[in-house]
Every structure is written in C-alpha cells, then in structure tokens.
Image (cartoon, rainbow, N blue to C red):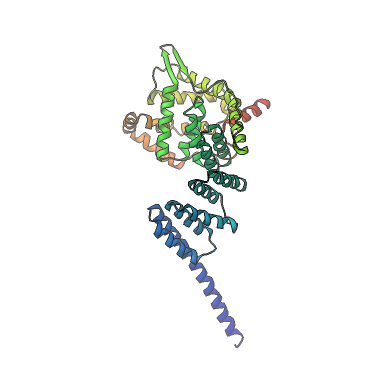
Length: 385
C-alpha cells in the first residue's frame, strides 16, 4: 500500500495536468473565435486584447501571432505587423498567407522593392499559395505592366486553381483589351468560384456588355464577332527585373500561341451560334450560349480543346438548368429583364438555385484552364491522333 498510494496520486495528478492543458487549448480557441468576430466588426483593440489572452493560454499556436498581425495591419500599424510576421518566419511557423501580408505591409510602408522580394520568397517556399501570385501581379499593375501582371495571375491560376482572385484580375485585364475571349472564360470561372459578391456582380455586367459590344449586326445578313486579335507582337523591356521580365515574356508568347484557339475555335463557334439572331439581350444570349455549347461539342472541341468551364456548363445543361444559369451569369447587365424573368419563372429559378448550391465547379491541377494550357492540350491530343 505504501507503493500504491503515491502511484495513484501521481496518476491523478497527470490526468489533471492533461485535462488542464486540453482546457487551456479549448479556451484559447474560443478566445480566438471571439477575437476574429470582433475584428470583423472593426473592434480591433478588443480583438488584439483577446488574442493576447488566448496566446498566453496556448503559446505554441502560431495563428495567434498571425491574427494579431492582421489586426495591427488593419489599424495601419504596418511595422508592428511586419515584426510579428517576421517572428513567424524565424520560428519556422510561416505560411503563404504570412508572406502575402508581410509583402502588403511593406508596400504600405513605401517599400515596394522589399514587398516584391517578400512575395518572390513566399512563392518559392509556398508555390501553391494563390494569394502570393495575386499580390505579385498587383505590384506589376502598379507599374502599368499588364503583361507581367498577367504572367503572375495565370501562374497563380495554375498553382491554385480554386483560388478566385487571380481569375478576377486576369478577367478584368482581358475584358478591357482586344483579347476578350480569355476574359469571358476567366470571368465566368471566377463567378462560379466566388458567388454572391460585389465582384461577382461586376464581372456579370462586364461579360454582358462585352457580348453586347463585340457582337455587331452590320445588316440583316451580316454580323461581326470580335473577341480575339489575330496579330501578336512580342516586346521585351530591359528595365524590368528578372522575375517580371520572365512573366512578361511568358504572357506575350502565350498570347501568340493561343491566338489559334481564340480565333479558329472560340470565335468561329460563336459566329455560328449567332446566325439567325437580330439583337443582343438576355434572351438572345441564352440562345447563343446554348447553341455555342452544343456546336462546341458536336465539332469535337470538347475533346480536342477541353475547357473546365464548358464541361461544367454541360453538367448544368444535363441537369436541366442551363437557361437559368445563363440568366444568372449575365443578369446584372440587364437587371430589369433579369428580375422579370426570375419572377415569371419562379419555380425554374428556385430549382436551379437549389441545384446550384449543391453543385459547384471543381477545378483540379488536371483540368485547370489557362491560355497556354489550352494550346498544349490541343497539340498533345492532335499529335496522338
């Protein structure tokens, strides 16, 4: 008994310690959840205080440092944020998000070169972090270098195909260019990935007005479709840094290589889809898009040039919701007509929304859509015939 009693005491003590540790972690997590909610509501000082309390309870949890840095960033205390993020790097607890925020903070501090170096370092360490390519591309946009920016955005799409913001940025550039075809595809993919946001409404309008602006009825028997430029010139800027120069060259070479798909496949199919129409509105665009998908498949392009977006449209059509989907995609461009259609087809719209909520587009490394990817895929499949 003299031996057994101490063992029982030690055992009970060990259980109590483990239980206390578990409880502390749980308390810390609860404080973190509350702190994030406070931060979302703009109560930054209260959020930081709660995060500090949670950090004391669970000092090994790196998310507390990250969230405190985020709150400091939102307060405009960029140097404080950078110091906290650097600590995460030193203790080897950094993630791609850490490098993205650190680069943003450095840029806000008027240190763009250090910001760029931080993004580049982050990309090397976390090549699948989509936000790093986004921020790196934005730095090139600030220099008015759209080719370099596109190079980063499209690398980001390939690296993180379910991250929406790179599609958004790429779509915005292309829809304001003479290569709208890529903006049409990137933009619609973006809308499927990020539903119900202000950016989604913005892209919906841009897609609608691009259709309306680039499909022109010259007469009763003549129509012009212009979504792609056929001539491409490659320009090299010696003033660019190495990473930006490579990104710019890649983007321009991709444009040259991908022009055949844009003009010979996309535009050609769209021209055929417009035959018989007299004007562009939501109703005619539903018919045009439905016919486009059918022709794309009938001509074998779904096999030779598979596009994940068109595969998803096929799925929507098979479920019986393509009309409602087309109205959703373009509805913000003609809001009155969109509202009238949903009111007149309430059951059809509700059925679509229920299905749509449960069926999202899935993009993997194997079916990611990029300009260069569509060219390479087509060449490989043609060679295999």
